[in-house]
Structure formats: C-alpha cells, structure tokens
Length: 75
Image (cartoon, rainbow, N blue to C red):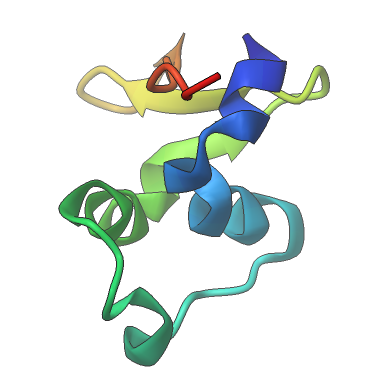
C-alpha cells in the first residue's frame, strides 16, 4: 500500500510536503486536478509514518488516523 501511494501522482505534492515541509505555490498547483488541490488545502491533516504510509488524522481532535488509500494507477 505504501508503494501504491508512492506511485499515485496525485499524492506527489502532499508527499513532498510531508517529507521536506515544502508548500507548493499557486503556480505549481494551477494545472493540477481538484484532488491534488484538496490534498494541498488539507495538508496539515496528514502525516507520514515510519513505514512510509501517508496517514490522515481523523476524529474530533485528530486523535485517530487512517491510511490514505491511493487511486489505482494505470499499468
């Protein structure tokens, strides 16, 4: 599942943010699809765990987490 997350191009900007703290600019996001833009807007709701999984914080206080399921990639 972590490998599938890495192959999902819609998660590239989010993964870069989680790894390096970089925030994509409006110019970088301009041509991106709505899913990528949504991840960007909600980037603080995600974290990268020690196994390389992208997790989404859930619950009223962000006290639980769920694995972000990637879209199936072509191929």
